[in-house]
Length: 187
Image 1 (spheres, rainbow, N blue to C red):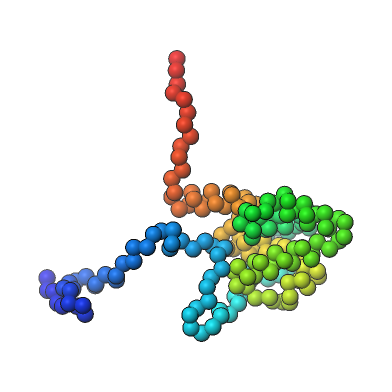
Image 2 (image 1 turned 30 degrees about the horizontal axis):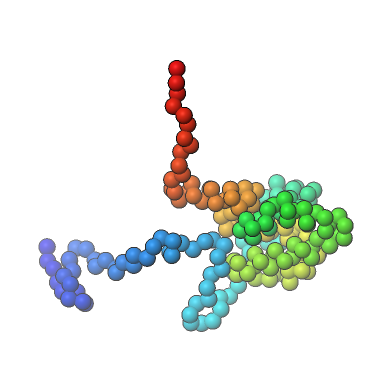
């Protein structure tokens, strides 16, 4: 096997390409949470907003969510809010606030449009077809269905809640969970 001098004076094998320098930063520093906003690039200014994974009127793409949203939008909204708030608000509380606003004032869209804005900011999504408040005021059910589908497209399952998604992520990454301790069997 023939060896030659590389750029930095180290021997480089003719059969194997040189390995790139390795960065041994801790795994915690390398991990980027899926809901964390992505930083703007250093050159070239802000990123262009990306498109939604599905259209506003594609409600029937997920019939179960469409039916749930039509008959009980407070549940769909609560599930979305729990994921967007990363578990700091529960599905029951957010859905209850939404339901109370819907029942008492009919203006739950004013509350839900705030979460559409949060989703757009977290995932750098465009405000197409129009501003968040207009989308929710004119097409509330369609907007909730689209947001639910977007979270599913991004790897979340809103029906599981925030804790359920964290458990699913831990199981998928191979993080070992401690087995439950049971007392020894006796006769």
